[in-house]
Amino acid sequence: MKFNKESYFAEILDRNKDLVARVCRIYCSATAPFEDLYQEVLINIWTGLDSFRGESKLQTWLYRTAINTCITWHRRNNRHAANLHLADLSFDIVQHDDARADELQSMYAMIEQLEPVEKAIVMMWLDENSYEEIAAVIGISKTNVAVKLHRIKEKLIKSGNN
Amino acid sequence: MDIDEFKQHWQSIDIKHDELDAANDEMRRRLAGGSVLSARQQLIRLFCVRGMVAAMLPLIAVTGYEIVVDTSLWIFYGLFGVIMSIVNFRFAHKIKKTDYISMPTVDALNAATGLLRQKQLVTTISLVIVMVMLLLLVAVIWDEGEQQLLLWVGAGIVIGAVIAYMQWRRTNKLVRAMISGLEDMPVR
Image (cartoon, rainbow over all chains, first blue to last red; front, side, top):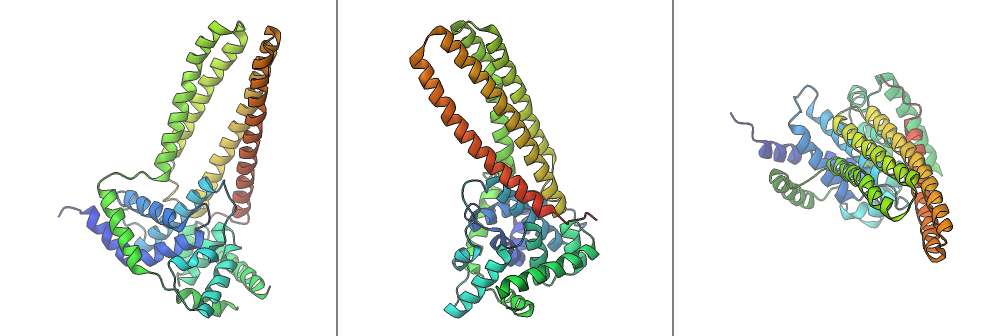
């Protein structure tokens, strides 16, 4: 049977659009708008489909593609303005009442304090991925994931208390 | 906000699926039509264009040789073009052969940092060379007694130097931020 790239791509996106959107939301900024990151991730998923052999789990591959795209895209383009607070941008895809919006705003503000790799680790943990899956995407050992996660949680608690 | 609360908030985020579905359909059509270039492909193209422009400098140098009689300056200028052309094509080749997207995140960040550092080093060296060449040009114009031309060249040098310094500082800041993002990240 002939491989239909277009329908496979559509199927993958349909099942994983939340994953891609969450990653882009975490890394978007004034110079890396959500829409641009999202589009770039889709381009790289499309391009990468040709070489994806299914050796790793599809979700692991998608996380890696989305995170690496956002980190490197952001780097190349983050040159002309200071980062805007993620929280300021959060309501174009999320609609909530005022109290809920405030909670989300503080959550995004706390995440924004983290380094790019820390963001990736905590995001995957929040999405209920195992240490093994996080380690596979980030490229560090499981033990290091545990250590980093412990420090990130401490950082988040500290910034939440301030 | 404690960690459990944090996790709760995260997992209850609602995303507007209608907008994402529409964006996905649009992108699927465009990608299937082959009309979209990734940022990486655009960057490769940019370095190739820069390489081609730099390769033209020796040709301009030949023309310049006819106007101003200072052989060493134009040889220097022509050589600079050749070297910058090679450097830009090398950057394009390096980006083309490195798959930043499918490697582990820490490796991708390491590779991107390395590339940016190299680019910053090349920029620094080329800025020094350009400054030397411009000063030599100023000396030639001074000798010729072209006061008005000297003023224009002087203004151009000052404006160019300010812009170049600002760009250089931004990239330096970026490199430092990337390095700090990699600290304490032992590779498996």
